[in-house]
Image (cartoon, rainbow, N blue to C red; front, side, top):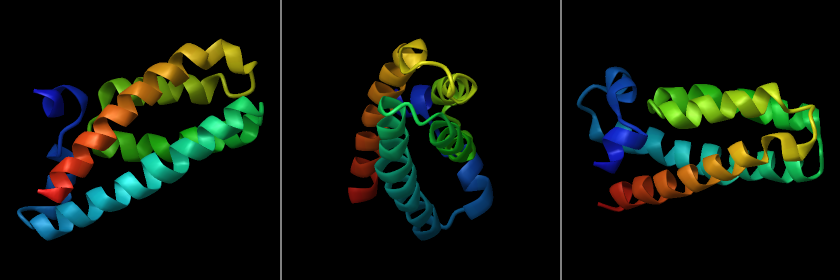
Length: 115
């Protein structure tokens, strides 16, 4: 099952309990801010070799990825954060893998939100 492998709602459910409206609200915010804003900004900054911005965006994303138990994504974002001031090519593999993973997870989360 993709959800169990890529992410799960265990931690967010600990905060929201059985409140599905709250769960959906936080997940919608997560998709909007983490996938559609922060990740896009991080990739653009990486291409421009803006190390401080890459580091800041990666740092910002860590907590969100951890909240949804995105284990592989959390590992990748930490590598990117550590390599932020190195040449873009030194973490391109991690960027590409994380991009693929986040696109897949984002689409899955959007479909869950749409019911």
